[in-house]
Image 1: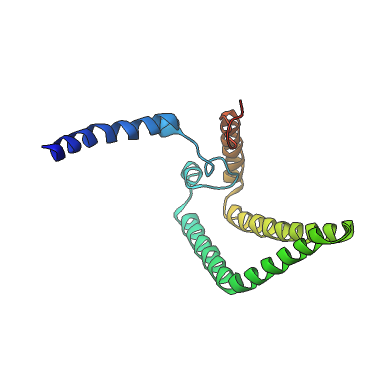
Image 2: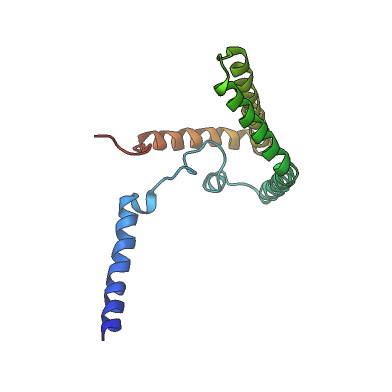
Length: 165
């Protein structure tokens, strides 16, 4: 009998928990971080009325990008770990030195910044390739849709960490 009661309670409570969490996140219309990023997402692609040829070009480009990322990740995994450890050692040497060396600190910060700039340029290059598939009219519509989406995201409350009281 105890097991039957537990199952009944679970059957009642579980849907309530799910509906409450969906309500807490704005239900079906909740826009998460993916929807608020600039760029071309699947929803926008539907709104742009792409031709079959364009759809195929996007599919091919996504496959190429995915393959390139996989190859880059596999090739650089060990190199990246070694570079991170070397950077970590340089930072520790800087922090534990007798005197702080602003020139070395600037050099370390610049190295990190250069990597971020390189990644940003690669990302923008990929986005440019994707947008070059669109017609001028579709590009104009894309810009309008993106502005609209960003305005919607600006209206959303932002939650960054714990609230302080």
